[in-house]
Image (tube, rainbow, N blue to C red; front, side, top):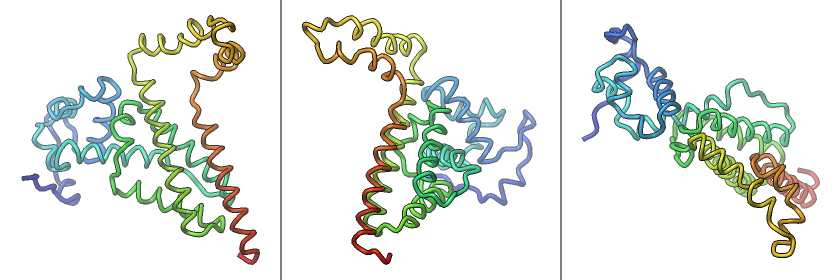
Length: 240
């Protein structure tokens, strides 16, 4: 049976740990993210998290029902960091692009946490607020709600898919990452035109681009599609 999570008001009355730390959900999440950054997923255990906080591991269950509950809180923290300080400009395309880049960047700043959480739906406050904002940006452009949801679905899935793809590369051991990046120079750039004419013709461009994220390009392509949908909606209903 899942253990009962103590309400926030009760948590605030907790005494400091032996290390002089007053536990909070936020502190636990930040410490868990630090452990992920240092040691990867295998390094994030209740025992290690308790040791890093100077607390009995069992005390963490006052804040989280288990490891999965903590994972969802980390996911929500990443979204919260992405949204922090964002302000709408009233230009739907600029606003949506900025939101996408912010989310992508927030995940890449914590690649191990990104790989762990990008596929999850937390249903927590930051995620809900972000979804409300993104849907609002699209609706403000005058799209029918069916088109709003279609584009929102593609936007958020594309953003998180690229976030986890790019984060997985950053999460590799340095030697493995360097070896992967070197393949374009060491292998593709040496393929002869006689056997691989298309690669040979484009290899300078491939070498220049392929170790960088394609997310900005993919995002612009999605925004082009959204702009076309908006144009169609306005043509169908000029008074909208």
